[in-house]
Image (cartoon, rainbow, N blue to C red; front, top):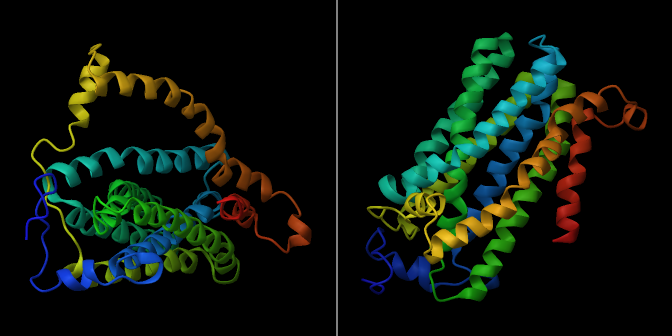
Length: 303
């Protein structure tokens, strides 16, 4: 059934529409939305969990100098936050959101399990390959998951969409809070391989939950030409005077300041962890990586 000229035909099984779009559950959201929110929490546990213990792993297991470990951590973060550009292009123009999440999510999962093996054998080459796959995978799905959840609601329910994004953001910080507390504790008791295995297992579980809802999702097809972002960027840099180009230039003036913020913010997982490892941390009751829990906890309190 076509939903209007402005909304492409969704791809889904016949007879599922009433279940996924008709039935409403808690907070007036479709069941598929709750599935996506849960998957996001598991994925964020995986990302922040492996990331929390990465710097000390590079130093203590692979024998890197502190400066080298910080640089490697920074490279991993940079890749994770630049690859969303590729994921968005694949999603919008080639594969669609569902296929992009499944494909690049699998790359992400393989990277985490490769990291488990690298930690067990203290392999620097294996670690490098694992971090490359993880960076591409986690970044590739980043622009797709939240928008895929919004697809399940549709264009006409602004209140439900706002509730969904609030829940989605909360799930990110719940997942990261638990990961900051649990993963370093597992590392302290069982070692790095076991600690990396926990995020890898939870990500695999999250992907399984996500794929299991395949026939219930609204799946919008990709559009030739995508969202037109690349063209708008070209016009903005070329001095175009249309609304999109002017808007991008205006936003760019604000975003130009963000790299300074992120250069400091992202040291929570690298330089600050190294510093925390040299502190007493409440008489040793806290692991150095667990101090990073302050950030997601404060976000949840102020959300």
